[in-house]
Image 1 (cartoon, one colour):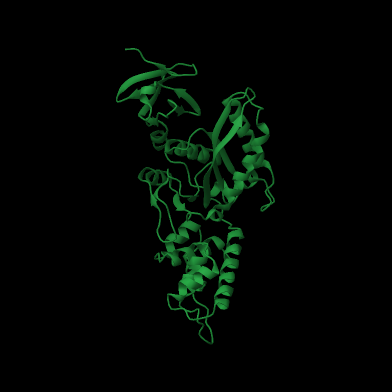
Image 2 (cartoon, rainbow, N blue to C red; image 1 turned 45 degrees about the horizontal axis):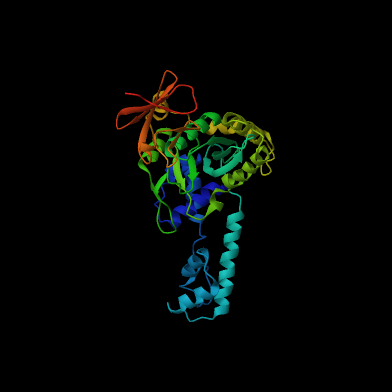
Length: 367
């Protein structure tokens, strides 16, 4: 059975989305009749047929929703009593246990995907390491993993703004040799303007929506507080603990970047428990199914557009994994960064306020 197709159909039916057999078949690289067959056999959301009616009938969906929201059986019992439930607490409590068991199985069930179908993205946020000379570096690590081969791309960043996200994703696509057909995200602010909930779909940010169209992938968002739906990335985040032994063992941010790069190669050459093969070995097959990279003109439009940063309350900005200081007068203001002839220029309200030419900090431009 194609679990990826079966699970997608269940989701679409649950959300009352009209199914286009041909479109789903193209997405999952299969015959439309396979999709139709799975659609017609998916009866998992129908109530069980019973020889005799139960007093729980009519309340099961409410009870299940409340269990998923973390409510206790006793609280649910008092709630549905006011809704007209006239059964005993014992049968309601047993049904709550059944729902919890099903949710636990669902959470731990491995969700397998076809080659080239899915990637998952997340951040390991605010990870602090101390250099050999005692300087603290609070970093973020961008994570992207392909669902079939488990090939992982990791990149050290100093912020998590949208420009950094787009740049890191492009670097990941280059590393993989193509673009997966769909990418799973949590409700990060650089992707959605309104988070997905149990009752509402996510509202995708306009800039990120156009980015997805330019690169050809479909955006899939997780429901809030449901991290198990992106388990491969969550498991990858645990690998970041392998950076801990390098505490006090590096001297510069460049050296730390090299450590992250070596870790990326190590984890992609190690055999993965679920597949029994190193991710790089399976990537050879998966590359054949990835979408091609867009034209160079599209790539340049994302990599060369003006970069805007907000000056922090410490009077600092972050650019290309480095931090620079500015005049305190600009704290809280947006500045634009441009590069030319190995020099970084900073503009505020159209005026050049600072420049950097190979030194650690930006110098105020004299008029």
